[in-house]
Every structure is written in C-alpha cells, then in structure tokens.
Image 1 (cartoon, chains in turn brown, orange):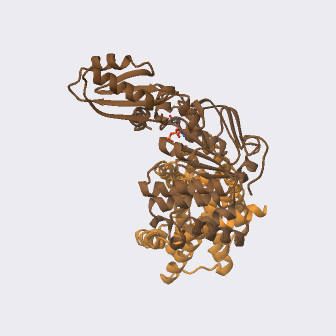
Image 2 (cartoon, rainbow over the protein chains, first blue to last red; image 1 turned 180 degrees about the horizontal axis):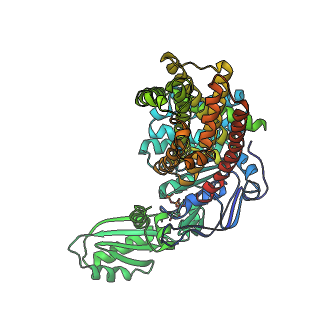
Image 3 (cartoon, protein in one colour; image 1 turned 60 degrees about the vertical axis):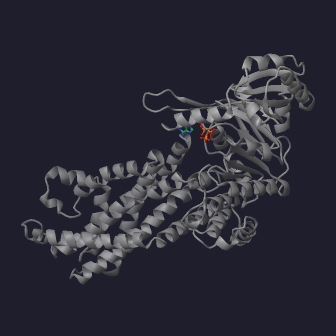
Length: 337
Length: 259
Ligand SMILES: Nc1ncnc2c1ncn2[C@@H]1O[C@H](COP(=O)(O)OP(=O)(O)OP(=O)(O)O)[C@@H](O)[C@H]1O
C-alpha cells in the first residue's frame, strides 16, 4: 500500500561510497557526498552520464549496497538501520533484467509477490492485473527468454510493482530499447506516477527522458549533485532563450560577430564554425534586431532558430562539458571496467 | 520461520521448474553416471583380485556407492551456477532488495541439488543392479545411502554457493570447485580401497568429508553394516552441513559489500 509518510519519500544525505580499485589501482570514489530529497508521489530523476554514480545511489537506497558514510532514508525508514522494513516499502528494477528467463511472465510475477509476503491467490490476481496493464497478457504463459527487449523491460517494471510499493526504483528503464518501446515505457511510467500514489526514482542518461518524466531532478556528475530542481527551474536558471543563426560558409566570421555584438539584448555571443550562438531574455525581440544588424553588414544568413534552453545547456553550464562529450569519455574509460 | 519455509519451497520449485525446461540438461545428468559406472567398472574389474583388497563382493558392488558419492560431489561443485546466472542478470539483486529470506535462498539451491543427486543415485543403483551388483543392505541400506548423498550434496553445494557469491564468475567457481573436489576424490576409498594406499592417505582420508559419505553409503549397502561407523559419519556430515550453510549464508554480506 502506498503509505503516507511525513517528510520526503526519499532522502540521501552526504553519501560517500568508495570501491576498491583492484590490483594496484586507485580506489574508485563512486559517490562523493551526494545529497538529494524527493517528495512523496513524484517522479524524481537522477540524470548523469555513465559512471556518474546513479546506480550506486540507487543500490544504496534500495538496501543492496552500503554507503561508507552518509544517510539514506526511504519512506521515512533509515535503510542502513532497518533494511528489512525498507525492503517491504520498495520495488527495485535494476539496470539489468530482473526477471528469470526460464520462468514465464506470470510465474515471475507470482514468485515476486509471494516473496514479498503476498498470499498466492492475491499474487495471482495482481499478476493478471499487471499483465493486462502492460499489454503482456498474451505472452503471460511464455518463457521470458522468448520476450523482446521491450516486453522483458515492461515485465521488470511489473515485477517491481507487484506488492504496491510506496517507492519504486527504476535504474535506466529504457536503455537499450528501440524508440517505439521507449515511448511505450514513458507513457507507462507517466501513467504509473499519476494513478498510483507512488514515488519513483528514475535514473537515466537521456536528457529528453529526464525532461519528459521527472517532475524534479538532480544532475549527477562524478558522484555529486551539481544541480537540482524541476526541469523548468534548471532551464530558467540559464536566463533566456538560445538564438542560433547559421551563416553562409563564405561569411567573414569576425565581421558577423562584430555586427551582432552591437545588439544590446544579446549576451554570451559565440561562434561555432559558421554558426552563431547567443542568449537573449526575449528571443523574439532580439532575433529581428540581430538579423537587421547582419543585413546592414551585408552578411548572408542561411537560417535562424530560437530555442528554449535544453537540459543539455544546463548540463554544459554546470559541468563545463556537453552531455554527449561526457558520455563519450566514460564510454572510452568504460571499456576497461 | 514460516517465511523461511515458504520461501524455500517456492524457490526450490523455481529451480526444479527451470531444470525440467532444459531437457538436454536432464539427459546429461542421467547419462553421466552411466558413463562413469561402466567406465570404471570395466577399467578396474580385476582390482578386487589384488590380494588385500578384501571387499567381499564384486568390484561393481564396491564401486557403486563410490560412484554415487562422486556424482554428488561433482554435481554440487556446480551448485553455485544458479547464483552466478542470477547475479549476471538482476535477479539476485532483486531478491536481495526484497524481504526474501537469505536462508531460503541458500537452502533452496541445496535442496534442488539434493533432488538431482538423489535421482542420479537411483539411476546408478538401477544400472548397477542390472549389471549384476546386489545390495544386501536392502531398502534401509538404500535410504541411509541416500541420506548420505543429500548431506554430502548440502556440504559442497553450500561451499559452491559461497564461492559463487564471493568470486561471481563461472570460471572461477568451476576452477576452485575442481581444485577441491579432485583431491578429495582421490584421497578417499571411492574407487580404490584405502587398505591398498599408503598410510598417509588413510590418515588424511579420515578427515575427508567425502570419505565420510563414501564409508556411510558403502556400509549401509553391505550385508553386515557397521551401524556405529554409519551414524558417526552421518553425524559428522550433518554437523558440517550446518556450519557450511551458515557460513555460506554469511557470504551474502560479502557479496553486498562489494556491490
Ligand atoms: N561493484 C563495483 N565495483 C567497483 N567499481 C564499481 C562498482 N560499481 C560501480 N563502480 C564504479 O563506480 C562508479 C559509479 O558507477 P555507477 O554504476 O554508480 O554509475 P552510473 O551513473 O549508474 O553509470 P551507469 O549508467 O554506467 O550505470 C563508476 O566509476 C564505476 O566504475
């Protein structure tokens, strides 16, 4: 049952976790004083590139791993002190598949319910309900090893929901799914958050996923939270929209920059090849002025766009690198993991 | 306690279900004892005639309990495989983040392995009987032998599970298990009467849990069982089972610490 608790549904305070680095290597500090709180009944997102420490955070909150220091509470329960109580309150969907491929979908669900202390009859009824909801009824009696990636992932989430937990952990629920399965999973998570009085902790390295699903999020980098708030708040902190003007390739870049710098409402003007980027409080006012200035200098414009700030901009601002770059770097390092 | 019993039952059922869904696995498990029995039976047919062997009956009768225990030992060496598979996926992590009884996780794999070992033992007994071996201990003897099989399986399955939780890799698990099971097999009377071995082998064998099971099983099948020896050996095995299962359950903490 979704229980009403006073205070936040999830709280991580100054979590520190170090993994031994293996033979001759330095220990890895996976979490370096990570803190956040998530309110009851919301979808809270942990956004960060691979290796940022998202999974480690989830594992600690879900009683799987222990932090070296710091505090972790789930539904008001201190997970280090009362792991057994915490385990009844949570559903855990790991980054890896949590269903048994040699059991059918239905068997997986019923087993999960029984292990959570549900009576077999109740577990069977609940399994039918969840299979229906995740459109898995037809596949219910098939072995999970015959499921597609998207089906298996939906079953994983259903397994986590069997005992109606008050907090559900979803560790990268859509990684490796094709766009269609991803869209379906998103819709499901949105519905879940709306219908069940449940707090969801979602980790992701997709900016669009965090933007769409999380009502509040924390950007994690190198084991710390570097920014937090609602996606809107985070974007608004950047003060203003992006103005992007693409110039023809024969344009004199310096001349263009000079011309535009006379427009007072534009800030943070920069050139990226023949693309000019700037920021403005009200882009719809600034853009015509910029175009006029370029026109006066007889410079040819190919296209002009105005964009609301994205989480990518937020990420760049707080970590000094673009998300794509951060992801590439960790993938290079990741090969020796 | 009821949680422990329920969880043990449903988790054992899960593994048995999985086994029946891989027919190749079942067939392999049944063919293996046949191969061992026939191979050793032919190879060493003449050993009973060596002076001093003194087993009374045929070598096949001497060998049968030895092969049965050997199957149980080698089978349990693989027990940790179930954990490895569960760890490679997120299944183990899901169990450990739910109120699943740790004891039940341990005991269910032991029971499952025990069921496999008992079935294999019955196959070996059947084939040996068809090949002319006679077991004078009768039904009681067979039941005591099966008890020894289950206890031996429990000791080494628990050990294998602990290795699996700490090493987390199939190759490491098999390497370590074999490193231990082969010497245990040769330092026993499973296929060769230790009366013919050097004295040190006999001395070492007395501390070998595998030998305890072999002695208990062989005595139980014999015409005039030495009941004192049987109960002493079974007692030792039972005590070791409890200790090993408890230690192996502690290994869950080791797994969680490195997670
Ligand atoms: N069991 C472990 N043993 C050793 N190091 C680990 C272990 N788990 C994680 N790490 C290391 O800790 C750091 C944080 O990893 P974590 O898995 O929490 O990151 P993440 O943000 O979840 O990334 P991913 O998207 O890859 O899961 C990484 O450098 C990783 O290599």
